[in-house]
Image: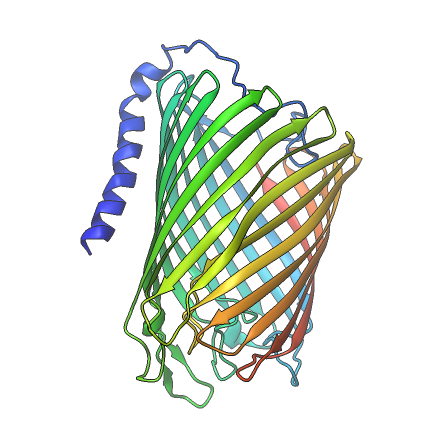
Length: 430
């Protein structure tokens, strides 16, 4: 409880510090310094400014307020992510949001408030509403030095495709998440030092079984901490090398049963990497190193070995961006009998600007989860095709197709299933 109070207080302290500087911010103009770590030769299709199509917002003092709402209709062919009993349904969703962004010359403050309501045509037990509220800020101390912080609260719903979702649950599992982030960065000449701390608190709500009984979800409640430090050295304006170290800890509620595992764990990862932008064709970050996660439960073997993280963008033309990403890390899990999962991911995405106001996207990802304490491995393929049509700065249309396929193996294997979903939506913004 003390850790949770400290984490929330730290995030609020940074936001308060940013807000306290607002009065003098507009009168202070820092001298811009060209950073050797800037990667601005290329602008991806999704990042490219489109002033004639961007929302104007509503000005309120030193802030711009951006109201937005989307309405969509989707068709899904396996609502319960079932292996043998596929059920289809139409799903209507409505998602209003409000974002406030500061317009100061120094420092930055942003706040958001959003909700998303889902209504099923045939299976009303799956109806749900998620919402989120939070704020984040940046305090510019001096040129090259900044402190960042943020705090957010989310009411979320676990998807039926999640490994920990049970087939006998009547409703999707609901849970609350509190997130607190604190960081700092110092850049001097060719050197940059970055430090960050992240806190997450998860509170799962008990659920109802199809037969009418109560399903205990409290064993999944947990608090996680992650602290990291990274040192960069700019070899040239197009290339930097860096070293990073990350420490994490998980603190879970008591196991569900005596035969269930204790999910408490702590671990670290050390890695070296490169941050680059080669001409106008390629930019990215690639790192590799060693990871180790030690579980409190003696029955669970430690997870250790190669850890990596990477993202590379390729720009064959100004109208096409190809993105490749990869990651390997250890994640906590709420799956009964498992203390964690060694997670590997590889993916690729293409974004093409067919017209100034029409963007086409396609992506595919492969995920592999090897569970610790349980004889189970999951191989998951996901894919997405999308089209985003910006009619004008106020109205947009989107068409999205999603594919999810899970193959599970082992003595305690999960379900093998596939889900297809097509969604058509309209977005209104100001």
